[in-house]
Structures are given as C-alpha cells and as structure tokens.
Amino acid sequence: MNHKSKTHFFQHVLKILLVLCLCLVEIKTKATFAQETSVDVLTSAEWESVDDSVERALVWLASTQQRNGSFPTLPQGQPGVTSLCVMAFVAQGHVPGEGPYGAQLLKAIEYIASCQKQNGLLSLIAPRGETISRNVSYEISNTAPYNHALSGLTLSEAYAMGQASQIENLDSTIKNAIEATLAMQRWPKRVPEEKGGWRYLNVQGDFNADLSVSGWQLMFLRSAKNAGFDVPQKPIDEAVGFVRKCYRPKFGAFLLRVTDIDERSRGMAGAGILALAHAGLHDAPEAIQAGEWILEQDFRRYNQIERFTQTQFPRDRYHYSAFVCTQAMYQLGGKYWQQFYPPMVRVLLKNQTPEGSWPAENHRYDGQFGTTYSTALAVMALGAPNQLLPIFQR
Image (cartoon, rainbow, N blue to C red):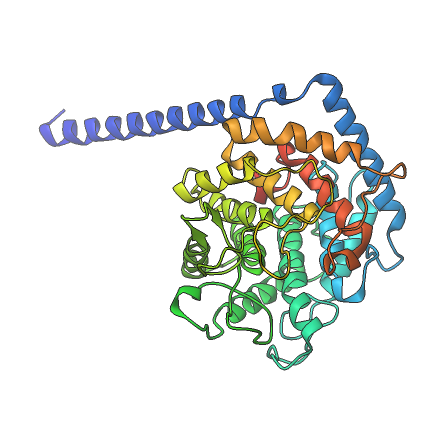
C-alpha cells in the first residue's frame, strides 16, 4: 500500500470512527432522556386509569362525529376542531383506514381537505378567490388562520404516517396550504421584530404577529417539511427568530407578542418552549426559564381563568394551556416532566365527566367551540408520552 493509499485508508477509518462516536452520543442522549421521562412518573394503577380515561373519551368523541365526517362545533371552528379530534385519536395509536376508528378518521380527513379554498386556506368559512383577501369580518379574520394551521398540521401528519393515501389529491392540498401559510407570513409587519410571525387575516390593533397563531403555523410548516414537502428553511428560521423575540427575560416567560407589557399566560409559555423544541433548541435558556415559570403555576384550579397580570382581558385558556404545557414539559424532560405531568394527570382525570368528555373551556371566547374542542386537547395532553404523532416526538 503506497503512502497515498494509506492516507485515504486512515481517513476512511477516522470517518467511520467519528460516525460511530456520534451514534453512541445520540444513543446515550436518547437513553438519558427516556430515563428522565420514564413510566415511573405514575404508578401502574395510575397508568391504567389514564388508559381507561382516554378510551372513554375516544368512545365519546367517536359518538359525536357527524355524517360529513366533522366533529361538532361552531361553523367558524371548522375544520380546526375536527383536526384536533383526529390528532387526539392518532395520539393514542389509532390511524386512518385501520382499526376500530379507521373509517371514521378517513372520513374526517376527507372533510378537512374538502374545506380548502382556491387560495389554499383550509377553513370552512374563509375568503374565496385566488388570493387571500384581508377585507373580512372580525370573526372570520380571527378563526381562519387557526383552522388553516391546525388542518394543515393534521393532514401533513397523516401524510407522513402513510395512512391517508386513500384521500384523493391530498398531496396537492398540502402543497397549496403551505403556499397559503408562506403568503400570510410575508404580509407587512408593523415593526421589524415581528418579521417571521403570523396573526389574523385583517389588521387589528397595533401589532401584526403573535405567538399563538405563529406557534400553530410553524408546527404545520415543520410537519410538512418532515413529511417530505418542499418547505424553504428561511421562513422556518424567521419564524423561530420571531418566537425567540417573544421571550422577555424580566418576566421569565414567552409573551403573546413582542412587547414589554406583562402579558404572561401558561399557554404562551408552553407554546414558546414547544416551538423552540421543534427547532432542536430544547436546552435554550428561554425554554428553561419558561419551564421554571410553568412549574410555579397552579393547574389544580381546573378550568379556572387565571389572571397573571392586570391586563383587561385574561389570555389564559385552561385546556389549551394543559395541552401545550404538557407537550412542552415533555420536550424539556427531567424535573420539568416529572414535576408537571403527574399532578396534571390527576386534575384531568378528576374532572372528566361520566360520559367521557371534558367541560367546555371557561373562557368567554374559546368556550363557544364546545366540548369536542376541550376533550380533544385533554386527550392529547394525557397522551403526550405516547410520542405517536411525529410532530411531538422528541
């Protein structure tokens, strides 16, 4: 073997050793995380109670499904609420086209896809036409972006799992939805700090991007990218940048918008952590501090509106906060998961109705979307450790 051949040989060996070392580090990291989020957080009896609670909830949800495949809520909540219900089933291992709920889930996905408008928006009530009009009512403006992001997320998750191939044109439906999301992200912003974020269809108030809408839109884009769709990296990076700007060190939490006004809520704290986790920033300082803040909050006051600030309108929603904070604390792992999940489970199980649902949100706005909305969120909170929805896998 000549000198050149020896050099190439040793370079090849070094590359193999480097790959092996990286694999060992990844395996060790995953093993450590698995230990930190082990089943030991609950007793065997408590896990059985969780399983029983979830099964009763899914039986109840299935019984409410309408003939067109939707799950009941207000028209302006469609197909967003139906999408949450589908994800609740999938989070428990039920897949479209298979098993006891397979046919129902396929029907629901068909309904979700059927709501898409020519401009790409996935919303039952939304502006029509080739482009997204911003000249719409307050009600449509506020709900359409949520319906769109939730529905896009659900369709891309189903697509990634390979369980929705029976749905005609699902590929093009998701592609058109991606284009609509990217178009809305490019709309002019009030200040440079809002670049990368989303808000409502029309312009309201003095800001044009918020973490609530942006969190769902970012989840959709990342899910679609993971499913193999062509999603440019720049819009994702800009969205993550916006999320990080919503964190305020003096409050120790993420806020709804880029502001120095104290607008803390459990939901936005969880949404910020989750958004960074999806970007691989599990150990970011902002996420850790927001996790500490969440641990200080009391979720035992079930379905109560908590006022963390003196703002006129409380921004906190119990079931949404329970869902997003549970997913966020799972991503953080360690003490955050161990201290948060058990009491959250006990509160949810204690307040489930005999029929299997959870009461409607005790919030002047979200309450109108009904018990399917709150029940789907509760089921996904309980199912966080299942890791069956690709987007929520660590």
